[in-house]
Amino acid sequence: MANDLYEVLGVDKNATDEEIKKAFRRKARKLHPDVNKAEDAEDQFKELNEAYDVLSDPNKRAQYDRFGTIPGAAGSGSPYVDFSDIFGGGFGMGDLFSSFFGGGAGAGGPQVRREGRDMGVGLRLTLEEVAAGAKKEIVYDRLAPCPECDGSGKGPDGKEVVCPECHGQGRVVTVQRTFLGDMQTATTCPRCNGVGSIIENPCPECEGQGRVPDRQRTTIEIPAGIRDGQQLRMSGFGEAGMQGAKSGDLIVTCRIQPHDFFTRDGDNLHTRVNISIVQACLGAEIEVQGIMEDEVVKVQIPEGCQNDQVVRTRGYGMPRFRSDSRGDLFTHVTVTVPKKLSKRERELLTELAKEMGEQVSDERSTFQKIRDAFN
Image (cartoon, rainbow, N blue to C red; front, side, top):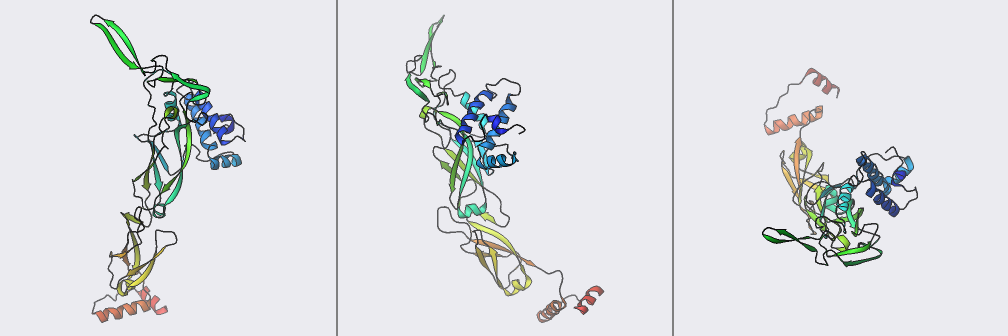
């Protein structure tokens, strides 16, 4: 990013968000490797895309305006979002422009899908966010309805007319003479791509498609208790259809990150705590941090608790999906044995051993005996 990002996009520093979007789309059409045959076409488009990544994000733009640089600017979207086509494989703004160039409404070629495709993102969440529920803003690239023509594909004086090539049939019939006779073949109309109509005076922004590559910001509401791998469907937030056709959906796959303290098992949580041998023998009430914010769970350690024993505390696990109830918290106990004892602690344990009739070693080093004498 050696060049000034505003110069790369061809806008001034006071440009609005909409002006930045338009400038990016305008230059991307010229610099995309599908149409730009220069040897450094990919580098030019990459530089343009990186500039847009920064200037289209309010936070990154503010940092750039203040410091003149932005660390880690390459790559679009939120840091907790994994982008992928719903059918597999990554995608980005460059891929969207390739689709845009290949989806002309008035050019020849294979029949173009009018309805928008579904898109998919993987959203990374913390266990705390899943426990409490969360609203997450994500940023992703898609073919969106054209803002200039409201998705119709028509320019200011544009109108939809019957295709003069196929007369509205969407197919053309060709006749080929062979020694066996005349052979008729019906193919998709190359003028309207099977639609049966064309647009006169198409929108210059979208070239008649009714959709343009754009960066979408939307907020997703994550319900409490959602499971890892569970999907949420956002109707109409996928790829926009051509010329007002139905948009696809955005399918959000929730991916829950590992936690340092808790392990999830369905609606239950598992954790591990250390207790002393005294607490294990006599029982105790200990406090552990719960999964909810500022939640403190009182765990009842039973008398005579053994190492690796599991103590169940009801109602302090994960919220059940779309329910007011919660799972349970299972505390795995580790009984810790002190490596060093004071003189008084040793005396007490020795008395306990005698009371219980247990044989114990009284072999101590000279240093330990001297230390005990001073203590």
